[in-house]
Image 1 (cartoon, rainbow, N blue to C red):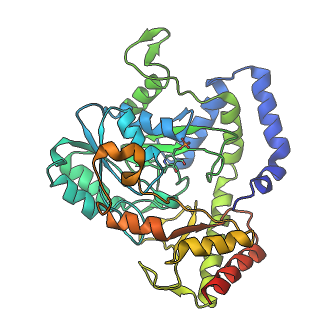
Image 2: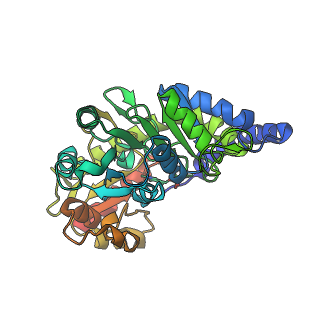
Image 3: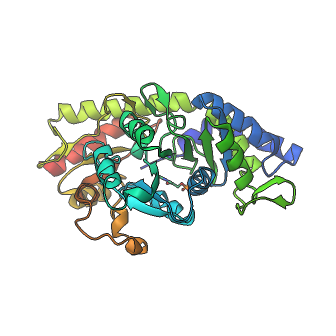
Length: 377
Ligand SMILES: Cc1ncc(COP(=O)(O)O)c(C=O)c1O
């Protein structure tokens, strides 16, 4: 599914030098190595502020807390994402309210969000938290209109979307505040857990920095109850090295996606979407969006059988995500049931992610597509 060693080997010496520099400076928590990365990351994304923290999950919580989201407030998000998109809202003390997804992009559907805002729970909503799933930005034209007209904060879950764009603006600078993950499988990845909050607002950035250090503005004077969610120097140094290469890696991911498209088309397997009949519906780039191709996810009706067939042939694949969030045991408290979000439930039955990473070779992709063709025949 993913061979991280292919990325690591050519960077081996550069990474060791960066780690040695941290050892020499003995700045293990925040400090200069993290500050250097934060400045470079903000510049890359075209945002005013970047605040490193210890994971994407913490970045989501920090973004919500910095934006003033707390008890008595509701936040609208998607049922089709990683667990943390919803759990972080609960951790901020607020109530998650879910709306269904657009079946062609798998992202939160602005029309469904609007229906929630006009419904009985709409009055408590203070923010919308769209997830740029699989590396494709959510429909920001629609969400920024909703944010403006309804006076709501827009919080991006950009965990999977380093380098993604909407109308030429990079994810991380679209909403009021955004959260990134640098989990080792991400497009820009650390050697462990790491995350970041980005914003163009001086006020929100200042709050995020205060909250990541137990609510301190002055050492040992605590203004609010924050948390310890600092980024460590080794991760900052590693991320700063990789930041130089990530544009090239994203370009290579794009080429891999294009090659899959061509191989599936040539094999006559691609069906037009959004739902498959017996072949596969390929992922597509929505108008206005520049996909970061974190994942290449197709839809197919006999998904579980196809996955078993690929596994037998030692071809990696993954299901992001097999159970929509409203049907997770931990979120029973939210009060939803089977049938609450039909698009998310159908996606959870049909999606299959194929191997995609910058160093994936053409012959490997041919093997993947040939195996899928064999299964479908
Ligand atoms: C959409 C989404 N949100 C949040 C997270 C949480 O990030 P982390 O694993 O760094 O805590 C992830 C990580 O997989 C994610 O994919």
